[in-house]
Image (cartoon, rainbow over all chains, first blue to last red; front, side, top):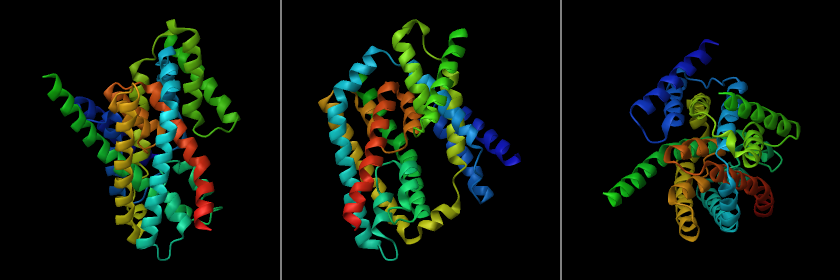
Length: 171
Length: 162
């Protein structure tokens, strides 16, 4: 309970700071970094009540749903074929990278574990299947967590770069 | 204020319906579909208050941060540098894919990047709002990505790993 409140306080502070200083990535990243730092300094991960995640998704889902109009639907339908093709490319890249990693560093680790670990997403769904596919579920989960941390770290830098370019063009 | 509560109520109904149907990520997909459908029929309901998205981002960020631990990274052991390299390579591929998507369709590069980056659907939606991307498009295409991976990956892995 105390830990939950401590992490929530840290997350709130991080979110507030991100708005105050207009950091790229916004409150999600601000709260994530602050609560991540507290969690790392406590030592062990403190899983928060599942209800907090559900409330977060409910609010984000409701907000996102309320931005939908006819234009949204038209856009989704028009880009879908291209998106499916590109997702195929991402999955192929994930498989290729998995084969490469397993060839270089695969001692003691099954190919299925590495292949699930390098998939572009689907962490929650695939972790449930890991065991059935002959993979190590804990290792798969760790690989996907490492991926998420890297994405959260790298995306704001990319965005900042893109924003800089856009400002440069407009001025 | 009244509309804001209505939207939230519709979101809860959508979430419960999809939980009952055992759809993954029901708490996000349910409200998205239910509120989206109602908004298409009744556009005058307007947009949900910004506080919804701000509090949602704050809570989601805190929950993710709380899963960080040293043992998670230690567990990767000698695989850690390879996992990092593979992720960076995958992000580079996603960047190329986003560039192609922006080139071939009407989407701008920022929206395209959030549609294809493998970083979790709610997480990418929460960050996409910061650059003013079309959230409905990002959320839907992220769900398509998730579904494709979860459906195709097991088949491909059985084929390659056996």
